[in-house]
Length: 606
Image (cartoon, rainbow, N blue to C red; front, side, top):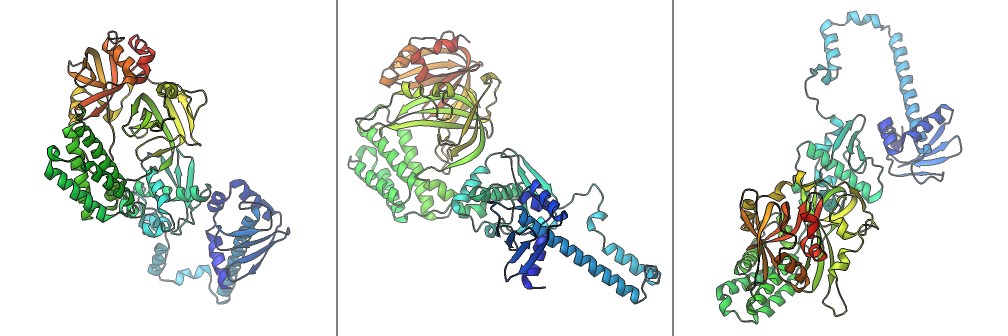
């Protein structure tokens, strides 16, 4: 037997019915068997690393010892029946040869005078020993004993993961790791192949006994199929209790940054702390700007953002602005100084290092589905010249809050952003659904892209369906559903160095609004709310000309007298808690965007 013929014969033995059906499909497999039964034959010409197969119907195929590479004279784009016929015909030939060898052995044994009845001449202990040794070990186990994974598939747990993912790019691994955050029902089917079925994605990957992801079978093609194979393997390993964080983090979180910029930033902050704000010259603002530019060039995006945040706080201080907060300034300086020190020492893991450095542009990854519940919308404007509306949703899948933001730069003279127009505009997912309606609905997204901060992308491909909206009173929003006491504790919570800066949000059950007042010194409207237990909490809304109607209506008590037993969706900030929306039953009232349109009465009448 030639060298390649032996390799191909070993390969064809591995091509079981399950393997071929999953690689092609059941119909194609059955048609191939039918043609063989009808008399189609194959002539093989063995080459150095391939075999030329001439079918009796005139078709010509060239095969290797893998189904990843093949050629056929027929016009099919995908694997065809001729390839299957060439493999199945070889299997039948191999079975004929094996049966002929067995017949020859019987003839030789009879010629030597050995018959089945001669077993009585063999010592009893030798016969019993041979019988036991040929038995399957698993047959000796009681029915209740746990059965181990078939030895053919142990590589899925025991093989070095680093070697298996060598052909994957860091971006592909990053996306697969991102998907693993979301729950997935996994079904394992073990026969001649080990198949991992991902239920919510309606996708399955079948693994062979060969320790290679390239040999796994998946009907999804190209890059998506390659990532599906890795996701199926990792979810299988998670089911078996394996933690692959370290092996994956080295490939995903590859950080390069300027150490010199870190040292310069830390020296500058040390000088700030030593000098103190009272004696700090205004020229310090220029130093911050220079270092922010250096951080951008040195691949330190979060360091740049932190420097610009300190710059903004200092500008408030130099302007003697009422909104300047010493506590906020200390928090910003302390967190940045600690981050610089940790990065400079280079003693943390790749994941933690990446968390401290951040990224310039957020990456969006596709998730199979999101079941979302609208919580409200908030309009805002930054000092750097951006305006936008952020829409908030609670996700039932992972019990987190997701956002969608509609943002425009308005620092050019010809750029305008009307909150009313954008709030009433149509969403990119459903042509007849406005954003005002969108935020008051319960929805289901399919194949939608989100990023690390759980922001939803408006990119193409996502499908949106409107679901019947559940009353807010029957929901359990987990950690976000808080009482007055826990929100006050949340307000004073310390920061986490390795956590991405996120809004602190909460949903509070409110019995009534007991008082409202406008503080002229701080230009804030304060709503005093009371819980069912009688505990009180101040909700603060800063004044702006854009919200003048809203402030005036709330200050006059418009609609609030009849509003009782509702939920307040709030943002917890240093020294203040700002309300975003009120919820009751199936209704959502976004304070800045809805009260100006006279919708407060709708909520009060429920």
